[in-house]
Length: 66
View 1 (spheres, rainbow, N blue to C red):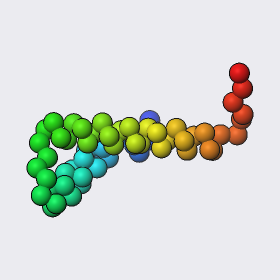
View 2: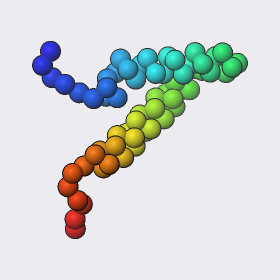
View 3: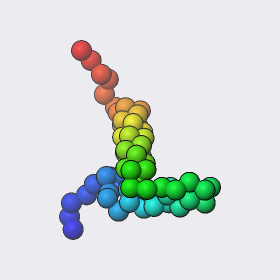
């Protein structure tokens, strides 16, 4: 396995995060069905994408120009 990818693009990591969030929601009395899991997936991916965009800009060494 020579290909590399970021942790947040891993389907295993995304699945684990969804499972953990579902367990936490269940512990607080929420019933998470398939539609709810889809919403959690979209939220997790959106947060991860925004976080990586900010991280990338902060770590960038070149200025943005027109």
